[in-house]
Picture 1 (tube, helix red, strand yellow):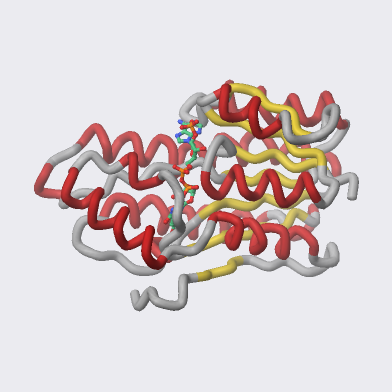
Picture 2 (picture 1 turned 45 degrees about the vertical axis):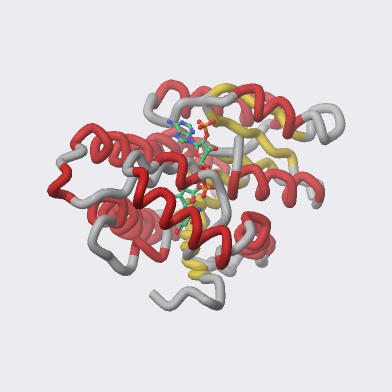
Length: 241
Ligand code: NJP
């Protein structure tokens, strides 16, 4: 398929796996993240110009716009934007890790808004598009320690449903991919060592593989144009909450 897909947070985990699944199926994939060496390695698995990359920091709206514009200038259209970059430095509110709260808001909420701002004018002009974001089971339930992280994912639920309702006339589909535990590097963003080890152990024994989530993304993209899969919620079978 000659679809053009832009993915943020593609240097590891879900973004990397999705890049590989979609590129293997024939899509042109434009990938961004801060770790350029990782992006280069992922792109090098594929033939000329199938996967292209650019160093991207989603906390900068210019940086996100430059990534989306690269797809448009290189391939002449943007069919799908997948806002996937995210951080999860969870901790109890009373620990007052205010800098980490701000980073989660900057990446998990503002980063997604910058993606929407970059892609929407292009998709409206095309009268066609698909905006996907990685939300979470944490966009539906909160636990002690996850208040701010869950808050960012709840916020995305509102933003994406607003986007959906506003853009029906321009045929822009929206999808939230909402996984439970996935075995990725996300735990490295947790500064509290005890919590990090707890979560890491849980994920190592029971998490989904990143490629399982990638297949959910591919499913949403592969639907006929009039079918909008607005959310896919998927947990490893052993995850209760
Ligand atoms: O984690 P990881 P995941 N600018 O750490 C990038 C959600 N989720 O795949 O910049 C640009 O392997 C970072 O790249 P780099 C989660 O909330 C996960 O699990 O090079 N990119 C890397 O590519 C998140 O939204 C689980 O460091 C930035 C990527 O983000 C999404 O899944 C459960 C960036 C993170 O990859 C992908 O995370 C769940 C920035 N400023 C939801 N900051 C789970 N793993 O259990 C970070 O419900 N990135």
